[in-house]
Length: 239
Image 1 (tube, rainbow, N blue to C red):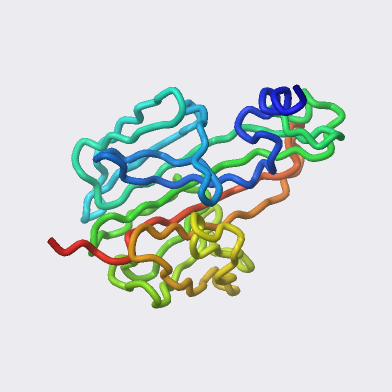
Image 2: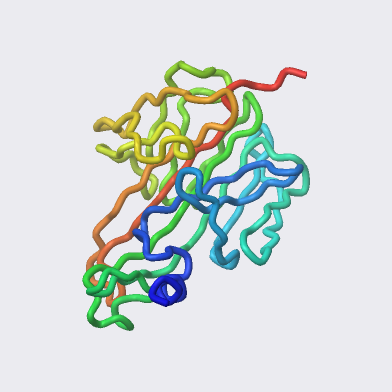
């Protein structure tokens, strides 16, 4: 009984840490699917939490995209195949009760909470070599590749820069293979928000990072939690 109550109360998190899940996109059966999970986990989630999706062509021009909200996840349908895809998920406010459960409400509604935060997840996918990155102001946290990630190749370092609220952030820990080794830190950003992350896989690479930022003067939360992923294929398919 306890487990089911816990699942019911926490909705997405099944008693886990409110920051422990990430967001990325994968191409499956010819569709671009949003994935919400941690490592090998691929969890069902409320598709209404996808707050935005943006697709771009190789020149960085926007392509219209529809978010198809399915029962357990969201599918992205750009008007034509994109070179770049960005997605945002607003996970709402979460409060932790004294007995360690997470509830999807702010602390004004959970007065005895020991911790309260609002989490946002952002994903950036690069599909085509030579794609020009647009300004990504709508992503409050983004891992920006400083060279074309599709041209680096497995076993070689990819230089990246982490921007939070549009500014470089130091001391951000980067996970080089979020699906295969989600707790293994590959690099930490320097004073200019830069780091080099080894490209791990021939197939899909998911580089990820998360930060917690203090929030002042908010009745519902004390922390803003941001997660960002950068996905690309390590070795291009040359037909």
